[in-house]
Length: 115
View 1 (tube, rainbow, N blue to C red):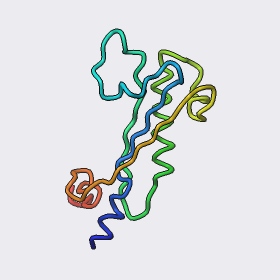
View 2 (cartoon, rainbow, N blue to C red):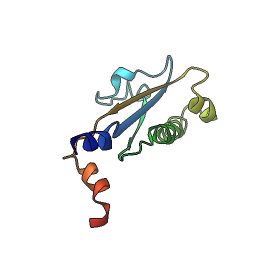
View 3 (cartoon, rainbow, N blue to C red):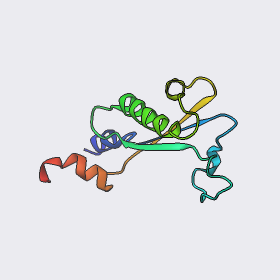
């Protein structure tokens, strides 16, 4: 049962951040926004990937598309396809971590029938 819980939550939280080289500073991700640095922040999207069958690739692709859509709304318009493909200086940073069994998202996904 312990192994099943570990597999169920493995790579359970996925965060994808996108930015353009030379314009985006990924170190600012958790820093407060000011007028001086507001255009230097990467665009990040979070998704959950819970279950015995991992959908990591699908979740990462969906989060990348959403992050690129948000990153190209005001600046770099028309570069959505290049952003998704990671071309022309666009950079993707994907982080994933284990979701423990006591996390609310774990309970919601595992016990969906109790809603």
